[in-house]
Image 1 (cartoon, one colour):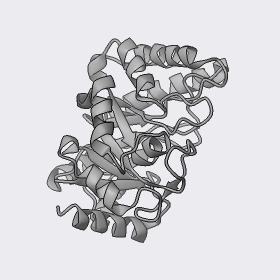
Image 2: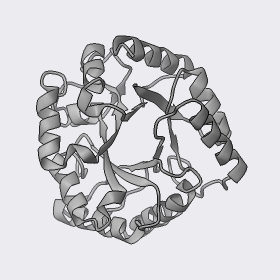
Image 3: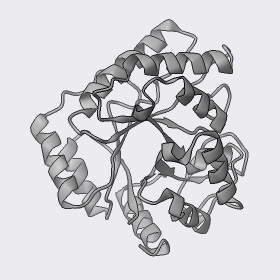
Length: 277
């Protein structure tokens, strides 16, 4: 089964997201845990969360992939920015327990001139501070395009962070197709080589989710600009082949393409058809 969905707004609550996902033909989805630009999170209604869990169970949903705000930078050179990241992630770990057993994805951040080693150290320290043995949520490091001082543009960055995390069973990876392609991992011409490299450096058992996006830019551009499926430099066939790879079976596939509801509904139907699910 292909678990596929898209990034939904949580403004109307959890159950509303589940119902909208179903209308689009989705069986998973992503959502921001709070405003993507940061700020205080809205209080959770336990009954609303329970209603979503019922929808998921009744309709055989895959894992959900919550997303931290874009402004979160755990390896910033500014203490107040790092403090915001810590507060956000601590709160979000508690909030995610209303939807137990799902995923929480975040961008590793940018070291902004401190250097790669310092950036990785700061990210690892934060994860060791916020991860607990009792949590049911798996925290996912997202692969990045490698622009500027981003951490996560190379598989080695992710591996070094995971190596430093004490509770390794609470950490995993979300691979973004646009990001890795822009970051010089050629999933179009040789996807098996990319997955073999990921397995060698990180371990495929750590790959828990996919962000499925085409790219507005050519291979190796390090720019990270998403495009609609089939309208960018990856193309529909390559994306479909990649997410259909037996090594990736069962992973939630989240569309983050520049679309509206009808566009996402169309992309989901198209990928399900091409992948022959």
